[in-house]
Length: 541
Image 1 (cartoon, helix red, strand yellow):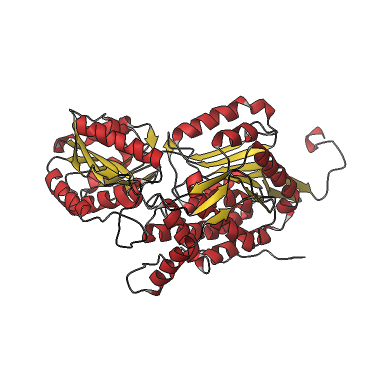
Image 2: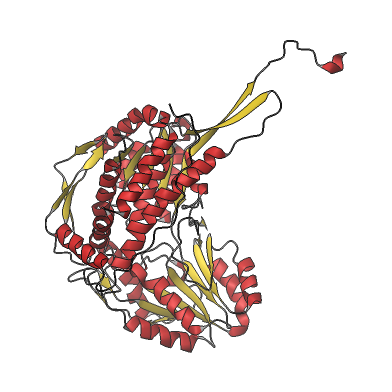
């Protein structure tokens, strides 16, 4: 028996490794990539701790090298979803009753495994499966996932420490129960860290989970599951299934024991799910927790006092790192006319210097977009801009899918403040610029606020502190993460809790204690040590 109140290791953000030429890290990562490509991997589902294979095998190919087969995954059906739910519910009692320090130890061990022996393997998997360069993969699949696992343990202990006051002769307590039922984690392709966090954060709080990753992230998702299993995660706590969203939804959202959704993905998908859940409210044991981080149309607002070089670099990185496939990527910029020539010149110079190709060549800054569907969607908007009377492609605009899904970083300039690419989330390497008159700063911020239904991230660039103050106030509801003189992407766990409002989600702030609150249900317990033995109150005399 553990008769102690434990103090967990203090979390510290994982240091990002450079992978600079000549470093040992670079050599190890190159070796891991070579090893990952040396064979065709067989990736099963994991249900109740068992590896599940089917007759329906689907090929996984690198987006930058579509003729190469990395792996085959075994696609399931509704019966596998039902089995995963049964496994989650079957594991629930034992898992939720496990002392919290043991749950903490499992995920702390997972963090150390990723920081050490699995670091290169998970980075290589992310580079190959999702076409991320070495630095982007390091930030994502290694550092951010490590940070999520470590900091979530700290946040869990903070929640458990929150207890009510007690009057004399009474002891009041709060018990932080897991949700009643199972949690469904639906994860995106673009961040391996998100794929690991969405099932593990509810699990840490004592819940059991059915996890469906994006089909284009399965190669790295398999490594995450391998890490969890090696860390000692009991069978059935997290069940990994590969099925279509429609199949999963039909089974899960009509199940009486569905207790919560942890989602990152598109706004339209989230809206559809939300409606489906609402239509089944009478069927559920309790009201499900719905946590979603969805789309974005993230902005950079520039004041005439800003430094043009700082703005240009922020746009180049913010819009084009990982091909703009971040929900926080800078996709629209509002730039004063007096600064536009200098910003445009520097931005063009920087973009022209960006090499594009396979992430296996570490000199490439730009890699491929995730798949054919994304490629066709993004390029259709580029083509439209080329034919538009109110917009023009001023940088980039070239693309090629003969070997992989490559799109050059593209900048569109428009005279129409409601032009499509200022409003629609493209999720690709496309930045749209609207040039405004210098004296229209406040009016342009109002325009910015009213242009998009999203409110995920945004930034203001200015030296003038009055201008910064005005922007912070005027754009209060325009972004859940707001940056001053910085690109609107790159949130760090524990430093910039991440999420957005409006059409960008429920703003339950991943990377903070706020997210973990959604995976517990508080119970108040009042104990009276010496109960009264007479119903009469003193006022009765």
